[in-house]
Length: 440
Image (tube, rainbow, N blue to C red; front, top):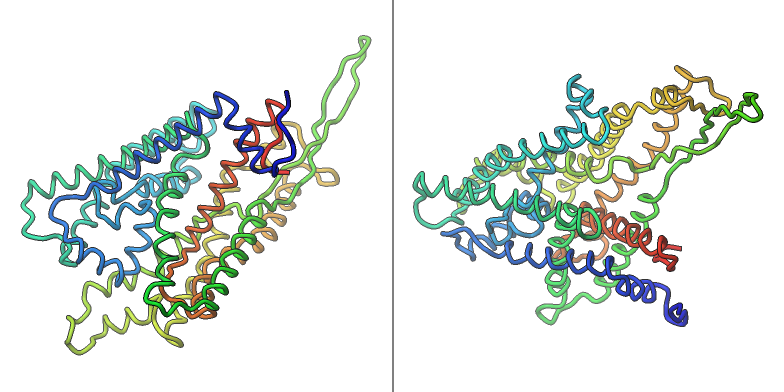
């Protein structure tokens, strides 16, 4: 018997999902692995001063980015403090190296087996990157007086090994979610870490009895408008019509027939990668200057001036430097990363090898010029979208006068992307079984 249709469509779709044994199993496995991740995120390394760690995160903006990429595990400096971002870094490096190194390029063109080889190299590359990152994190915490007591060589080695093991364990959990659960496991782990920090930040608005209700409403409206804009641009794409020539035999004679389809080119093909590149580059001078700043109570030096110029919380007009550079670098990296992706895909060559052609465009060089022109136009729209999203935190704080909530552009992009991807996968599962899905 078909379920009743009087309930709201979203609620009905969720009930339909839990009625299916295999889909229910996937959902429960995903939740179970996320619970395991949150337990691991609260196992701290030995010798951590929790009060000093809290003060460190309130004064260091670079730590906020690392904490987001770690899924919230760095805020407790747990064994999973690095999260999965060494693996993300390794994947980005491999993406950039595949078009440059001929052997990797040939490997990536070997189908599923070649992609598995590239993915295996990414896993091996994650280990040294995690070890270097772990050493840097411990050294950073030690210099910030977060680590208590002296650290002997054996303690250094054990903590680095623990951090590397925590990272690889989270990568394994993410792959388990991808294989046996719902959605992309790595993205879901980051999503879970981001979402758990928002209730506390929202509560900070109303702490102390002097809540800025109007500012909170304005802030919430900006967040909702940003989410709507992210959904629109994430799903937006340009369809390029493609025809494929086919040969058919009927009655001993050969006929030429044609079949049509399209190539969907996403407006935002680069995702959040340009934001990571741009923010890392803008924050690099701040991070270097933080090692040479004058001690508390002493006269400011040149390093303090650099920190003010490149600080995201610096008062206007000097504080505009960070956000203007962030805006411009996001546009530049969006173009760069998108061109690298499409160069690796080689759409004109693939069409020509498969006997496809764009109606009205000759195969070969003209097709390449035509596709590149379209990619340039839609990438401009996607780059401007990412740049606007990048400066939304500054706009939200300036308009609402609320400083207690740290809105993250990358966090919003990750959350919206994960929700959309997960809903699409559940939609496909429900549609295959003749149930109505989430998306209409």
